[in-house]
Image (cartoon, rainbow, N blue to C red; front, side, top):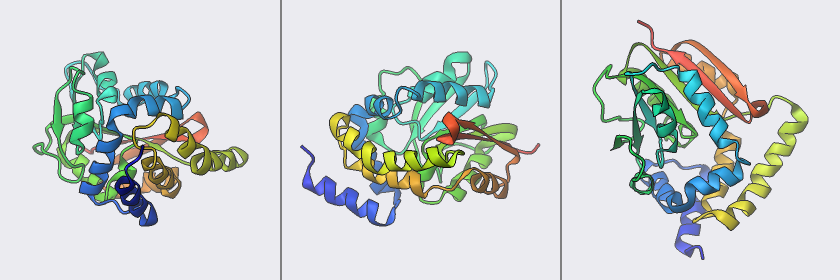
Length: 240
């Protein structure tokens, strides 16, 4: 049963997509227990292929160090580390990090807007399905640039806008109606997924996000659509 206080709290988030870090972290703490299972169900099992595509887009080499921001339970971090890369999981939700405690990758608690890393200390940064939950995404993009070495790579994997209009209409209907209903069956805090659905709908499309990467100082910015644009991979390079 969902605690009424949790429902009211999440409803407050839904009302204006408030993204104060402490409140969003608390929301993810409440969904951590069944987060991975819920993601697999809601994505129809596509989440694994999206993680593989993200790793491939990053193109990190064995021995390099990459930071996985908003890593949650570190499923994505394990994928990034599969090529002999040193991948570090970073998340501001202690509950999510604890839920992924059995995954043998380095973990650090941290906010995307104030990462606990030195300047130019990693070869690449990845953030998957997390940038839209940051209070100031542009500040986060600048912070990712700060910790990345010259020539390093950023990959943003995020929900986006389907490119085919009829499919886009069906997809938005799924987000606002079917997704919360499915979440009630599998999630440890289904009300949170109403907020998450609204945050997806409010997120900018592919060209707008590409422009924001460029404004934050990333060069050679490009994107790749996955699943017809349901997800987009944006890639940028920190200039040497």
